[in-house]
Every structure is written in C-alpha cells, then in structure tokens.
Image (cartoon, rainbow, N blue to C red):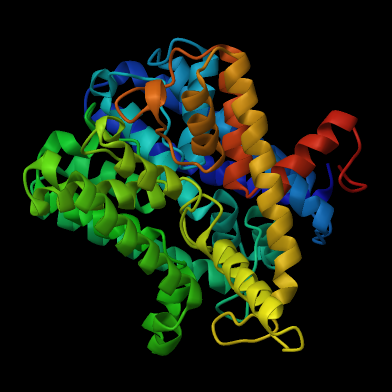
Length: 486
C-alpha cells in the first residue's frame, strides 16, 4: 500500500474509532456494562492501527492518483463495514458475524435493511451505534476525512469523485476541504435542528437523537419495532417527512441558499424535477388510498410519509404499504427506480440522471419532427449538457445489470420473483424494505448467509454509485493493483 493511501487510512481509522466513543459512553451511562468491552476493543484497535499507519508514512509523499482514490474509497468502506460489525457481534446482540456485517454495512451505506426483528430488545448503546452508522455513512467517512484533515487537500477531490459519481459534481468553494467542511456544518446543523424538533414533539432525547441520525442519513434504522409508526404522533411523522425530503436534496444547494444565491436554489433543474415527482406521487397514491383510510386527510398523512421514505431511500415506516391497493403499490414501486438528488445522502439512480435522459428523449422526438433543427440539453440553464448522456446511459445500464444479478442471486437462494426483484432494487438503491416477504414489516434475518454477503456487496456498490466498488472488487479478483503502490 502506498504512503498517501496509508495516510488516508490512518485518518479514516481514527475517525471510526472516535465515532465508537458515543455508544461506549452510552453503555456506561445506561448501565449496559456488558457492552462496554465490545465497543472499547474496536476503539483501541482502530486507533492502534491508525497510529501504526501514521508511523509508517512519516515524511512520505502526498500524491494520490485516480487509481489510488478508487483503492482508498473502496477499501475504506469495506474496512469500515467490518470494523463497525465488531461491537455488534462481540456484544452478542447478533447471532453470527455474517449478521453483524450485514447490519453494519446496511447502516453505513444508509440502506436500513435489518436482520433483527425485535430491535427494542437490543441494548441502547447498540441501537445508538446502528443509527449513528447511518449518520456517518450519510455524510461519507471519506468526506469527513477531507473536511477534518487538511493533509488530504491534495487528492481530496479525487476521493470525493471516487465516492460519488455522476454529472454536475463539483465544489461549492474554491478548495475541496473547505467544501467538505461547509457541507458538514450544514449536516450538523440540520441534525441538531431535527433532534430538538423531535424532542419538542414528544420524543425522548435518546429516540430523538437516533431518529435524527437515521433521517439525515436517509437510513431508516429505528429504536422501535414499528419504526416511526410506534410513536403514533402526527407532529413526529411530519417532522420526519420534512427532513427526509430535505436530506434528499443536493446539500450544495443549501450552501448556495445560505450565501444569498436563492435564485440558483429555486431554479435548479434537478430540484424542480424532484419536487414534481414527490407531488405527483403523493397526489396519485392519496387518491387511490383515500377510501381505505377513511378520509383524504388521513390518507395524505400516511401516503406522504411513505412516499418521502421511499424516494429518499430512508425506509422508515408508519404503515405497511405491502397491504395497500395495487395501484398505490405501483406508485411506490416506481419510486424504487428514482432515488434522491445528486449530492444528497439519498441513494438510487438519482433524479438528475432521469432528468438528463428525459431531456434527451424530448430532443429525439424533436429531431423526428424537425430533422434539421439544432437541439441541445440545458441543465440549470446551461446548454451543451448532451455530453452527459453517454455517461448517464452507461451508469443506468450498469445499475440495472447489477440489479438483475442481485435479483438472480435472490432467486437462486429461494426468494420468489416479487421478493427477489424488489429486494435487489432495495439493496442496490439503498432503500431497505422491499415488497412481499421482504416488506416494511419484515426483516432479512432468515436469508441464507451467502445471500447476505452478496447483498452487503450490492449495498456497498450502490452507496458508492457502482463504479468504485466494481473497479475495486474487479482489481481484487484479478489481483491487479489499482496503482503501483497498492
């Protein structure tokens, strides 16, 4: 492993070790002393490994190339998932290391698919760690490193690009470290705001913190078996709806809004498309379900929550949509293909890609009617964006190829067609619940171990928008280094 990569890993290990301190403190505060050692061991191990890496790179170079960025990001997420599984497994809360890894990867990738049916029986420190993994995964462990460690200024943008692919990705400030810090401050602020609002709405502080972590990270882990529905509180639900949608919007737009560039926020092409998709989905599903819920108002409350939960890929639940009318289920199933906006904590294909493809489709029709007309794609008012079409088409092709492979793996493992396909979309899109036996009222605990490991890979690939994990895994399989130092 090259010196720059060791340096990056040293900071990442230190961050994960520090992140394990709050649940360790919770174990001591709540008298769950049997869980103290399971959290203390990975803290010590991660810091020891970070120190060892730092000693090995003292005085080394700082250059990180594109191959190194893929290796760092892919390796970092794999290592983080395994390290995060240690306290879950060592505490005895999870029956096997496979289950612990699945839960940890599901947490860090903000998927929210759980193997535990009774989360209320888990120690509080374990539930806090589960929800905290969402929060860390939402902002991205690599982005945290870029924000907190100025040494990563060189190669920092490569790390961000390796973690999130797609069009319209750039810096909101002149330096990538400043960009990461600005977005991190916004992320902190929104988390604190939601925590306070949930506390005012009637949640205890512990539940408020955990659900704020899960909401802003668009993860979906809850401290209650019935998820947010257990609180039976309209204010709590509406707060979660608002913040799930807020977390699904490009965080760079919030920076522009706070710096007086409201026009850029309001005229963003992706944001407009996202709002339209949410509004149409809620309106259609509410009309379909109004009779079953007794009134339009009640149907609107539950439908709006589930639409926000699915499109944001959060996975919270207030009602079991698996028993809704087929037409309403089709609306939600369609959102499995969409996801949130680019630059958000949400998963999925991302709205910007569908926006670009929709604009390209419109241009194709215009060319058919007016063969000599010169047409172009405008994104946020900027013309010439048709250059994005090949990369977007390639991404969508690879995305659904991975979904197909994951569905095939589920079918081989014994899942029915509905479960296999919807679970595949859920894993790659980092949504969490699926349909059928994998619905919002169920869990993934009964799946074969081999399928859980495949799903863990699919979740990681989806979180890193495919290319990073596919390149990283391909390099590992053929034993060909991504760069000379790895």
